Amino acid sequence: MTINQVREELKDVKIFYARKDFIDNFVDNNVIARIKENVQKYDTLILCAPEKLFNLYVALYREGYSQFSYSKQTGHHERYIQRLNKELLEYFLNQIKRQA
Image (tube, rainbow, N blue to C red; front, side, top):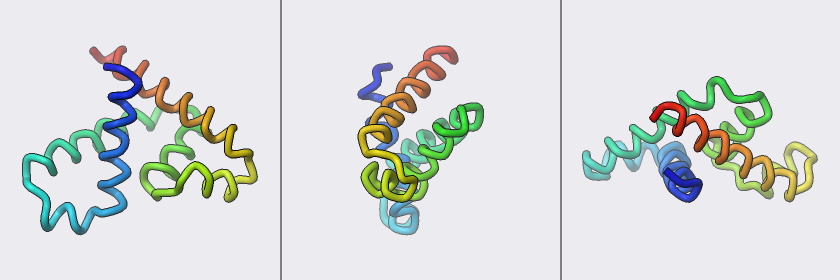
């Protein structure tokens, strides 16, 4: 797995939480199963992450904030949030590799 694959799977997580009602009612069951598998995987992996990464994951992927809006909410510079998101992606990639 690569960091870009992690990034793509996290898009599923974000879409799932943003459009859960639509997905449950109108999306093909095979697609739903894949999306829910990714959601469960990343929701489980984040449980042991450092607090700053956990909070970022919840904000960006579960609550749907953009990096810009999260930076404004937290008072951090957007570049810091971008670096933190990169750290989050690397955290997930390392966790996935450990499980393989």
